[in-house]
Length: 360
Image (cartoon, rainbow, N blue to C red):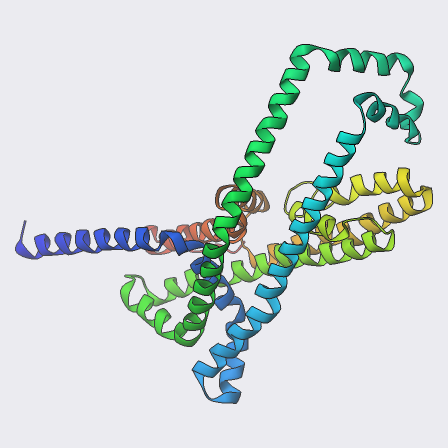
């Protein structure tokens, strides 16, 4: 082995070591940094337009960062606070109801539900009571209550401790977004020089990442936000309590296939049917079917498939797998990983195997 080979492998090992150490150092802030990268990709055209008008990269980046703070960060924080308050209030009401009513009264209250009450016979009530009265059932119930109380207390303590860290991560996100917008071309030029790939291939990889991010934003998150807003309007029209909480739940369940947002609005439509009458129940069912879920069934697949050039089944598993593994940021990471992998396979065919590209 020549001296040049020894130096090459030593240098590669040294870079790998410090790269891993750098990742470990940044690991507490990797999520806000990834969010900043995604937002910089989405908002760079806005920043570029402002730069042409203002003639100052720093001021343009500051304006865009301020817009994100005012339009996204602050409203999102307010929605989280209001939703948390509604969750606490709902939990208190359930607890008060359970404390002020015996188990027999709770079971008997089922008879007041239209249609369902017809099937709640005295014999069924007696059998349920006998089952509940069994010692092992009572012990299991008390154990479950104690566990839930313990977990809730621990979660509240962790949430209080995490408030400061969350605020700091928001600051990291905003600072990173500012510098990515201002110095984005510098980072890209550095990547072009550092990555040992043909410029055409690197452009393909960066291009597919860009298109994937936009497809996920408009096709997944954008449609979920629209669904949540439309659902909130519907919930407010029928005067459902905790409408904001149910709208947030609609947003969350919009990412869960195959039923999506209907996992939230359909049970609420049934509740409305029994609690507020047939007319309002049918109204909410039609509202959810024709307005909320129609966006999920028609608009989202068209937008995502247009920007993401991978089979739909792969897109499905990459999105859900990313969501489960990485959390909300996984909605982007999952599709990005697989679209980049498919692009690298194409480059491998073209550069290594010499196989001519085939049009899909």
